[in-house]
Length: 129
Image (cartoon, rainbow, N blue to C red):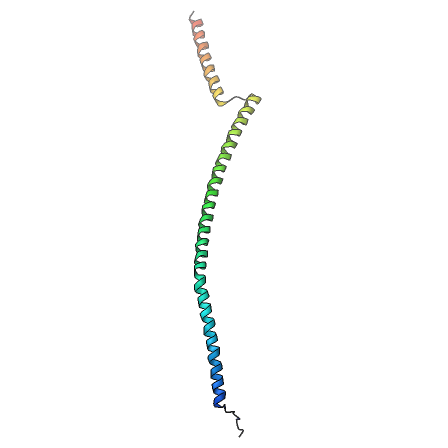
């Protein structure tokens, strides 16, 4: 059987190890305390940053809505301007080409009907005479 060689620690070695572990533990607790303090101190800054982010989001939304309303207004104005220009150009083309408008055709139709009625009356008068 092989013997398992184990080294026995002296009481001084154990005390030194315990002291070393205590110091390490105190160092870790101190670091945790500093980290916790830093987090607590950063909390207002984080809250301010969140409030600023919310304000910026609201401002961006408002600006986007304003821009959309402005674009809609400009679109409407552009459409109205195009319709007005097309109307003027159409009227100009009709005049230059000497095309007859629907109202003029109706007026001429009424005048022709009146003339036909007068001709018919004259014919009847002539036949009666």
